[in-house]
Image (tube, rainbow, N blue to C red; front, top):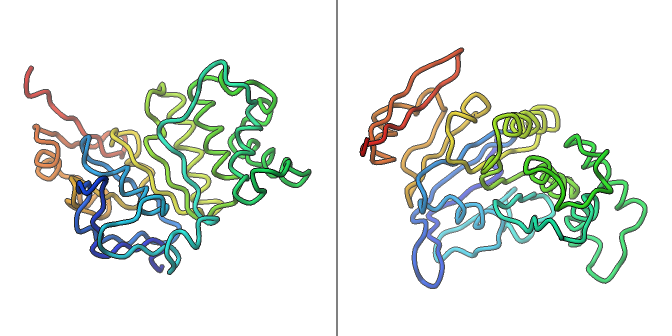
Length: 256
């Protein structure tokens, strides 16, 4: 498989302050990649560079062999933070339609085909029955799935997600991860997911990238998940064990 995302010597940041440095990375087509690391390690910055919303100080970024801005219609992005005010005056389907505005145009009204694409995206995430409900009234897990539907409405080949399980209960997390697994295996969408919780995702991943401003280590989860590597990455004692065939990571509290 070829690299659908390729970064070479990429350094990037904000206001001349470096957030990620000398990143060399190849994401394979149809893979499910997890980006992990402590707070401030540059994970979100990496996603922004891949989407083209942040231009690197140095280095090159290619998505499907082109600069990201040229293939943005093939990239779906689900941010960690979004407006979920309970008084927000938009229905679930209207939020999904926002994902189509780059194609529709901000001054045009969505047509029948656009609405049907939005409904199909909601159906994919299991929320077609919620299309008319106010977005702000949905549960946390349902809101996150609506945001995934918004990204899917544009029919992307790559889906990037920033902490999609943040703040959710175990059941909601499982629903989202199972959904992403289906998108990856049945629709061949390349998944790149940023997360803090390694245990939730290890059984789904093909590839893991550990970041701490630079890429600390990357590879197959079973090859690179080790107590030595993770203890140094997180700066705390870490234990790694298997349970029901899945890799589990326990970070000890050094202040206990």
